Amino acid sequence: MADVHSNEVRSYNMSQIKGKNTKPEILVRKFLFAKGLRYKLHDSKLPGKPDLVFPKYKTIIFIHGCFWHGHEGCKYFVIPKTRTEWWSAKIDKNKEKDMDSIKKLEDDGWRIFVVWECNLKSNKREEVLNDLYNKIIH
Ligand SMILES: [Zn+2]
Image 1 (cartoon, rainbow, N blue to C red):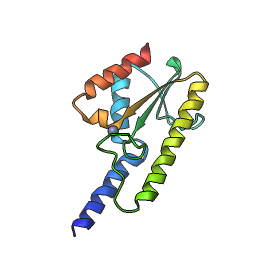
Image 2 (cartoon, protein in one colour):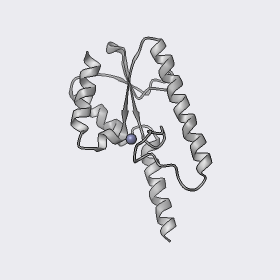
Image 3 (tube, rainbow, N blue to C red):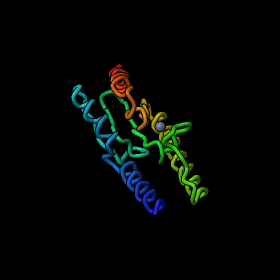
C-alpha cells in the first residue's frame, strides 16, 4: 500500500513539473509582467523553445524543473530507485539538450538566464525574482 501511495505522489509531482505553464513558470511570468516587462512564450522558432523570450533585451529565460533538468546537488533532483538507469539516461539527455540549446542561443547573441524551480520555493524567492528582473533590464 505504501508503495502505491508513493507512486501516486510521484506521478503527481511529475505532472506538475513536466509540462508548460507550470507553477514556477507562472510565478516568474506574473512577477516580470507586473514589473512592466513583456515577453513571448515558448517560442518554437528558437532552439529549446525557451519559456520566456524578451526580444527587446535580447534575453531568454528558462525555468527549469529540478527533476527533469537534473539540478546537480539539489534535494529535488533524486533519481527514482526503480528503473534507475532509464531515468539517468533520460535526464542526461534532457541536460544535453539544454546545453545544446543554450549554446546555440548564445552563439546567436542571446543572453540566457536559467531559473531553477527550487530557488522559487525557498524564502529567497523575492530576492531571486528581483535579481532576475535587474539582470534582464541591464
Ligand atoms: Zn533545484
